[in-house]
Length: 236
Ligand SMILES: NC(=O)c1ccc[n+]([C@@H]2O[C@H](COP(=O)([O-])OP(=O)(O)OC[C@H]3O[C@@H](n4cnc5c(N)ncnc54)[C@H](OP(=O)(O)O)[C@@H]3O)[C@@H](O)[C@H]2O)c1
Image (cartoon, rainbow, N blue to C red; front, top):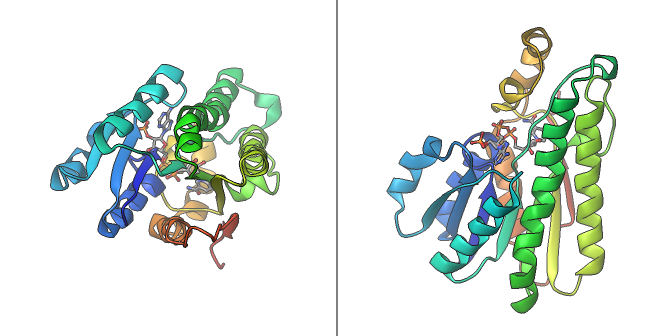
């Protein structure tokens, strides 16, 4: 596959599994996250086709520099996978508004900044594919995760909006996983007690490879085929 693909949140979980799957397609990968050293070893195995870029998606300058670096190195950006994200499990009454800010900045503004940075390039090349990792929390609302659900509802709304405004040029795929056994739970902003309550639930979730396969499926479609929505849950 002769494509250049940016993956945000590539340092663990779904992002890392997606990089590991896509590398065998022959794509050029631009892997972005804050703790980029976590995938240094992987990148070193593929010096010609992997570029690492330390990026905080909540910082617009970082995101603009990421897209610029991708274009400089590989000449184009064909696919953007907006995967970076995080959550928290807490009752609304126990609000920590800093957590709300972090979720909104990462899950919503991060997606918008990345979209904004690739847009001019995708318009010029009259082609592009944006894959947004939402969640079943984009389709439903769960108690103790209301703000996370709101951010993922926003991701779904943004995806639909991009599809409507750019349907002749840009493909948009929203992938909404149920529980996936990644670093997600440990990386949530929740308390140890809240995490402990949910450990079993996430442990029995999908492997990140399953989500990677679905992402790859969407990318490998012919130009004239767009996969708009995928919801994938563990069969419990
Ligand atoms: N696991 C699940 O059950 C599940 C279910 C539905 C949807 N999702 C969604 O799937 C996506 C990936 O999550 P995961 O399950 O793979 O969890 P994960 O293992 O915790 O991975 C999250 C990734 O996001 C990155 N990230 C967080 N904040 C960032 C920031 N400000 N800038 C750049 N990167 C940032 C992290 O990298 P750094 O810390 O290195 O920056 C990490 O690579 C998220 O959007 C999540 O909401 C997960």
